[in-house]
Length: 494
Image (cartoon, rainbow, N blue to C red; front, side):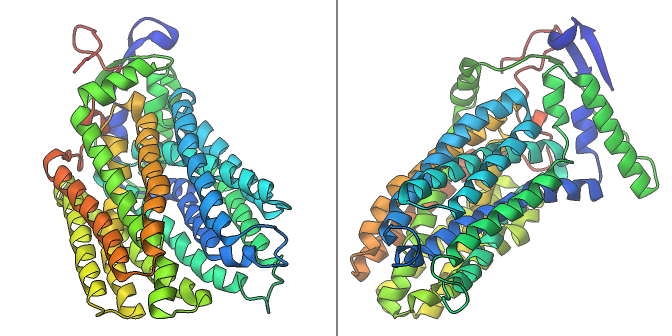
């Protein structure tokens, strides 16, 4: 029930049970439609990033159609993609909180689709660089719009496992990208100047399919409530309830709990900054630690992945895709199989546990590598074990920052911490780890592993003390909206 208590239009004060009604819903086909409509874009991201890394050698060859070097593909083009993702996250994240989740996750996917398609027809290096930047600009906005929408639409008891599985699906795309690159690099199948273009064109086609499916995903009722569209929110939630009740063939359980909010058009940067860095500064420390830790661990392993296999184990460059597919599969299975435990065992134990365990396993891998005890196969198996836990931890970083800050700051908070983590991992990380893994000295590669492992363990220790017990709790209980009022009608400030 939603009732106006005071005022009119967009500045009314209302009492509503809509968040409680959404959280008490049983799992249904409608929720699966949300997962498919919003979650599948990470598969595209994984496909895209993996393909670019694996086809770098083909792009650099004479006859590829582009006057570009392998270093420019993995260096400048990668940096531009990262810069675009960071800027896109901040730009679109702010608009997501102002304009709504649905409008932005349609726009950002459209930007991604267009930029990917135009990359496929690149005729010069500047064109390739420009549209790699714009592809990143679109995908960065996806992180803010998608994660905020998912958390606000999925019931509290399922939120952790769903969020982790969706973020982990990036690696399902990476598996496909690794295997597809093997085909794209085969000049007996495609000419050198065609295969790599078809891979980008395929990404654009898949994005178009997702865009058509996504049209049916609704706006977040929580966002509608705060922005003065409570009647629309009421109609939307009622229709969802009717659909799920009809599917189950029985009435839904009664929702428990109401809240009173003062509606607003937008939230200022001052309010956002006060919430994130003053009221919830310990939670911000947690967000920084989680994002930076996972960023450095992943760069310690994946940035020099192909070079390590070819330099130390004589694996042909055309075969590294098979090894990458194996560790990508381990990355996907981690969030998928461990996700339920984040909702049952709890956030604090699982976040700190996955970070610490992955860091310790990487320390062990570094020691075995230093002793010369590993082959290409056993090193890949070690990486697979490390990333099984690290992927669940990294996915929980996105879950954490999307649920521990107030509703009005959610998308911007996701964008901010994503940008910080991506910048650390995509700029300073490659600069550091490229220097270490490219020397061909075993000790330097061991040091790269140890740095990533150390930062991951440090983040795990921070999580052990600062992680929020958010499992099975409503978003409004974890962090009260800035618009919520106390019984006297004053906006809450604590």
